[in-house]
Image (cartoon, rainbow, N blue to C red; front, side):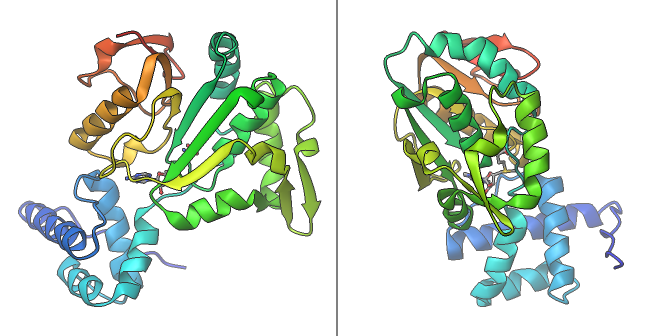
Length: 284
Ligand SMILES: C[S@@+](CC[C@H](N)C(=O)[O-])C[C@H]1O[C@@H](n2cnc3c(N)ncnc32)[C@H](O)[C@@H]1O
């Protein structure tokens, strides 16, 4: 299938396009309350043009008009704008580092509160639950898993994942330092893998918007991987403040390879536990 190219970035046209995107996101915010105004421009642009072509339109203004008058079109755009790609033990070296550098610290805690911000369909949450069970820590953990998107949270709550992804998940589990047999954690039923209910016993799934909602608890560990990349600098800064306000002293922040606290105003509040995996510990 041929894909429509993005329009050229001719001088002048590019500025006008930015204005149109700003008008679109402002309109969406005022009419529907979804706040994409500070999402990163290149990623917004790509996804908006994808929706324009899919709706049979040719301009951003055309999309703005349709979105504002047709909630169905808004829903379709919403799906385009929220990127939910995830996998179990995604970037396995992160989990290996967590086992080595963070688990020994958590052993000294009587109770551990963990927040997965932007958890998508929950694979990251089930992975951490498996790791914590294997380390004998799960029973003292309470995990809060949040996302802006209610539809992905429903999938996360079900604990049912396509069986076709289990080969990749198993490889990730082993590379991440898994200590058992991955298939022991699920039962295969036709095209799906049903994960053990005990893995979500201590998990609360809830909707939370990192752009507009505030801190809702104090945590010993916060994970937020592959989410901040979709935000511009101002919004990343806001979310970093939110995490700092939500972390206990000596709490752990896990951002994964793509994001960093460096160059933000909270950088001095953290020491690096693993530079590569972007695992930090709050020290002030
Ligand atoms: C690419 S997924 C990352 C999933 C998982 N953390 C991982 O690394 O595999 C990004 C998730 O961030 C969520 N998200 C985007 N904007 C958000 C916001 N403002 N507040 C909370 N979650 C948001 C999306 O709905 C999506 O599920």
